[in-house]
Every structure is written in structure tokens, then in C-alpha cells.
Image 1 (cartoon, rainbow, N blue to C red):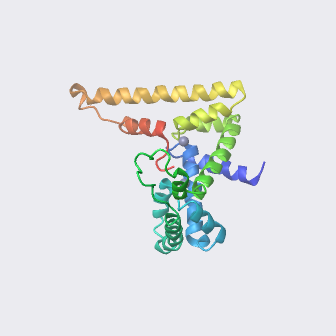
Image 2: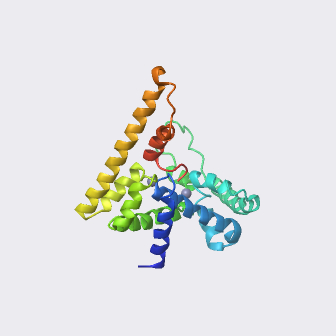
Image 3: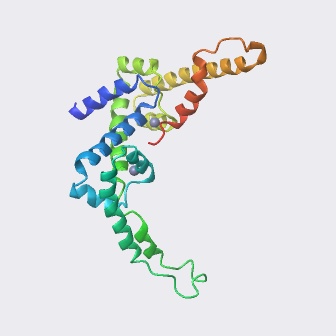
Amino acid sequence: MTAKKDSIHFDLLEVLKGETCPVCRLMHRHVARYLDTISYEAVNDVEIRDRLRAALGFCPTHSWQWLELNNALASAIIYQDVLRELRRRLDTLEPPAAGGLLNFGKRGKGKLDALAPAATCPACEVRDQTAIRTLDTFTRLLAEVDFSDEYQRSRARLCLLHLRVTLARISDPAIFRRLVSIERDILEFSEGQLGELIRKYDYRFRDEKVGDEAGAPARAVKRLAGMKGV
Ligand SMILES: [Zn+2]
Ligand SMILES: [Zn+2]
């Protein structure tokens, strides 16, 4: 077992205490750490700067996550480069030939490609690598009774996408059935909570106190969608 797997194992146990898809949660956390490193240490790292210049900055999702760090100086340094690069690429664009509309379909598509990122957003790469490592570890740990019990008790449900990917990676039929059965039971429980909440909206039962089911609708939506901003 490698040290990396150990740390993901440890992280997984920790995020199972929350209510977010554990895979989404770790992807988001690792990107946050990566952006933090860029913000404080790597702004002058030539390789990262080259990469961000080629990518024309972060992708939209990670641009917003980057802004949450509120590091104006780091943004200024990185984006001064990016804007200069974008301006350079704009200068390479050719206008359409005369009679342009008729030629619209043929017109310099290759030239407009200059405005497309020439590299993947580096935060997306960190996110995707984390997803693979987390799914590997999660799938492996499901074979351990302690861990699968912990997952069963947890409110940190796999989102629909990560449930699908996890099931696709399981080769042992017993573990496959175990995960399906865990998810099935939890869905049944959540459906019950939603039903209970709907019932209490009825004027005849309005006086009944709403308990844990108050959060069930939002949990149901989030459960399928996964974490925001991943
Ligand atoms: Zn997820
Ligand atoms: Zn990205």
C-alpha cells in the first residue's frame, strides 16, 4: 500500500462524517489545496505559468474557485500573462474573406482555434487524478466490512455519477451486490422521509413537529447532483 493510498483512505473516513458525495468532496478539496499552493508559492513557477498561459487561464469552474482565494496579486500576475497571450492570439486572427456570409461555413475555422485553450486547465487535471485515486481506494475499501459499514451509516452518499463509476469498477459480485443493497436501503429510507415531510404539509397534520425530514428534500437533490463547483 502506498503512502498516497493511505492518505486517501484517511481522507475518505473523514469525509464520510459529512453529507457530500465523498468522491466529489475529495476532488474539490484537492483542487482547493492545489489552487492554494499556486496562490502562495507557485505564482512564479515557470512551468505552471506556461501551462496557465497555454490554457488561457483556469476553466470557468476553477476560475470561480480560484477567485474564492481572494489573492489579488496572484490573479494580477497570472492573468497579466494570460491577457497578453490572448491579445497575441487575437492579432493572429484573419477577417473573413469578402462576401463573408456566403463563405461562412468555410471561413478560417483553423484560425479561430487560436482562441481555444492549448492546454487543459491544470486544476481540472488535479481534480481528475484525484477522482481516479479516490475511486480506486473507495472501491478497494468496500471489500472491508468496517469500511462498508461506515459508509452505510454515513450521510455522505455517492452522487449518481460516482455511484455509476464505482459500480462499473467493482469486479467482485458480492461487493457489487453489497453496494447496491446499501444504496437501495438508503433510498428507501430517504423516500420515507420525503413522504413523511409531504404528509406534514397537509393542513390536518400541520401541528406535528417536523424532525430530521426537514432536510430530506435538499439532501435528495444534492445526493443525485453531487457537490457544487466540482
Ligand atoms: Zn460525486
Ligand atoms: Zn478546471
